[in-house]
Image 1 (tube, rainbow, N blue to C red):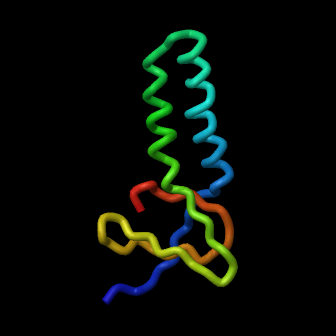
Image 2 (cartoon, one colour; image 1 turned 90 degrees about the horizontal axis):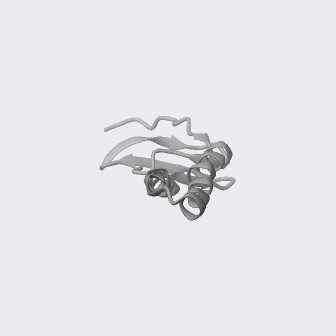
Length: 85
């Protein structure tokens, strides 16, 4: 039996800013400069979206990676974790 452990997630606001930078400027680059290689950062940004987690007061979020327990987020707020969790 595994013990419960706290997980320290990254700030969701910082991650949202980074994802914004991975998606919006490359879209303008594709539209105006016709640089199709900018689809790569857009794909990375879109893959990152499922990693956002909101933990409300008196709630927690359990993180499981491919069936293996990784931890629990107990702190209230907007967090970002590995998108596969």
